[in-house]
Length: 229
Ligand code: DC
Image (cartoon, rainbow, N blue to C red; front, side, top):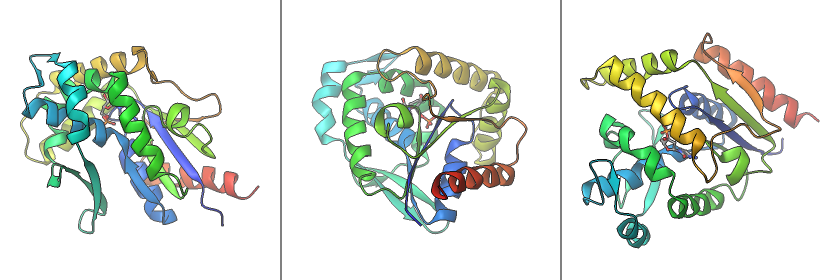
């Protein structure tokens, strides 16, 4: 069977990463979490004082970009790729609320996006990839054979993120998370470069009331429709 390119886009915290990872693992494809790349750049900026108090020093970040190397290494215990920033494992830190609160403005910067998109295209050169993000079907892989646009209500998504963080022992407040989800929806959908929107040929999936197993079946069916033609 031909290995295709699969783009999964959608709102934050709607379970894209889990479904993309499960799908890749069932198909024997590579999985790339493009949001982790924007999070790693944000972490670098926060640590270096390039981003602070909601302000980003754009010239400094632009100069620093060549020094930011992001890679993924598959973790057999979690069955998912871990994110490394300049060789350091940062998987946990990039998911913190501090990074989540600052990542959307960083991801809205055109020079950050073009650098990330270039790397993402290289990763997908050979097909056999599932990549999730916001602009994968519209900008990164406009020729992807299968494009899925996922969403769920903001409350459902905030609840999922809250349970995820508390399960990891991180202290958080549901109202803060809901606000963060809504703010990111707004910034992601209104930015000038590659705003979040479904590609015209994307299939839509509202997973508010779906289980992970149900989603995976649905996705496998979509893959079958694209590969059995
Ligand atoms: O999927 P996530 O929540 O980890 O994404 C983090 C942020 O990065 C989110 O605010 C949107 C942005 N992002 C993006 O602009 N383009 C992508 N392809 C992936 C993520």
